[in-house]
Length: 259
Image 1 (tube, rainbow, N blue to C red):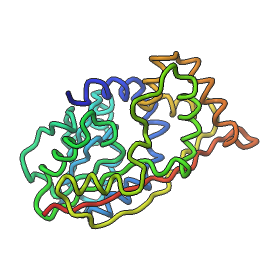
Image 2: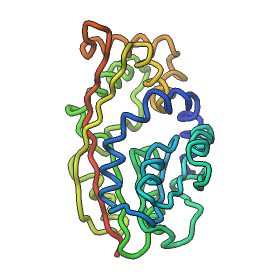
Image 3: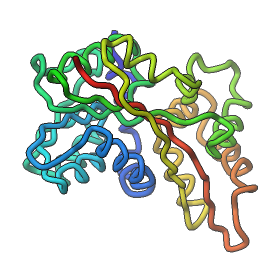
Image 4: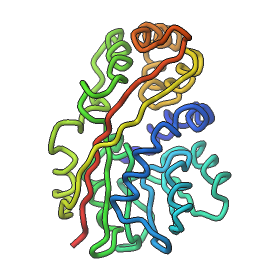
């Protein structure tokens, strides 16, 4: 079974808030991913897990032909409004609706970890990449390098059970590099990107945080008010006297080249 049915509903539940308050925090990571695949004018690039299309906008500004896929129809609606002439498809990462070797490069920004079958998703990403084309996958860095861990720990702490897979499941050194190798790609580059989540108030912080799939999943289990209270308590140590909140996070990425 693919991931679209579950993840599409979770990430689309507050798509407008994600696009407005959270997505742009990943701008440094998008730019690093595009540099790692040597994005340049005329290249055809797939954004596998494109969300509301933020990285696609960056790729288009470089002059790339951009195609996006995502599990959420609501997020794709926003992406289409941002880039009316680009192609966006609702699809599973485990079953991409493209031919072999169709893209010069593929970026998968924090999306592979949400696939129901990660190995199959990587196989598909490699399949649609042309010979000598590059693939970049990204993930949260080590938990101790991510302030969002405080938020997630607080939420998980009130769960009646431990979630089967968390956002840091691919954070261990060598994990994402191993995924590239297992998909038949040659590791050519790795790096880190700093993405600070900055909010002017807790209200905005909450709207941003609740728009992400993991918190939507949590709210379905333990209720929105319980999750909100946990998040509010978790971010107190990251709140300045004016009420502004900054969560500093390191993301890791690795680039592989198709043979």
